[in-house]
Each structure stands twice: as C-alpha cells, then as structure tokens.
Length: 128
Image 1 (cartoon, rainbow, N blue to C red):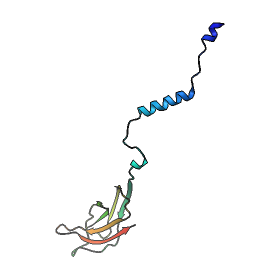
Image 2 (cartoon, one colour):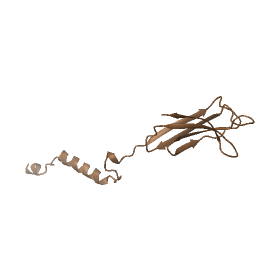
Image 3 (tube, helix red, strand yellow):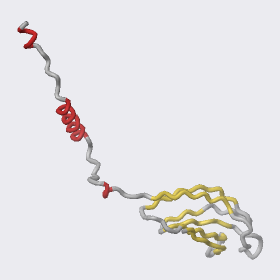
Image 4 (cartoon, rainbow, N blue to C red):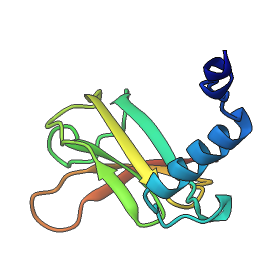
C-alpha cells in the first residue's frame, strides 16, 4: 500500500487559484483610459415634447401668424417646423438635447416666420 500514499492528489490552495484568476482578469482587461471616478464626465440629457400653443397674438399685418418655437440652452438649440397661418399651432415634436454642463435654464421662444426680413418675436419664457 505504499503506492497509495505516493499517488495522493494534493488539493489545490483555493486562495492561490483565486489570486491567479484575479491576476489574469486584470491582465486581460483592456485599458479604457480612465484611472479613477474623477475621469468620468457627467452628461445631462434633457427631453422636451413641444406640443403646441394656443391663442397666440397675430403677428402678420394681413392674416394670422406663421409660428415656430425655438428651445435653447447654452449654444444648443432646436427649432420646430413652422405652422403657416394659425394662432393655435400644433407641433407635437420630441427633442432630446445633450449637455456636458448643467443647463440650469431652458429658454423657449415663439416667433412668427417672415419670408423676407427678420422673424418677429411673439413671446418667450424660461424654465429654471
């Protein structure tokens, strides 16, 4: 029975295996260029649904208004389509705006489209 004692299989050291797996995982991990939490950038996503307006003032001398809405923060803006000859425009437009700084204010401006010259401002508001 001397051969039984010589053929004993040694049980592996679980701590050693765990350390080797962690080492292999660390070596296999690709460098993402980010060393710490401080390397992460905070992104702000603002979702806006521009539904419509009602009873806006008449901006054209003859007829109604040709309104469009502009929403903006910092240098980023979105402009709806122009609805011709109405005082109750319905846009039903959805927009997502992305910022790298907190847009503390969101500005909405309503304009009357003029084919010639500068568009006429009808109204505005700011959301804080």
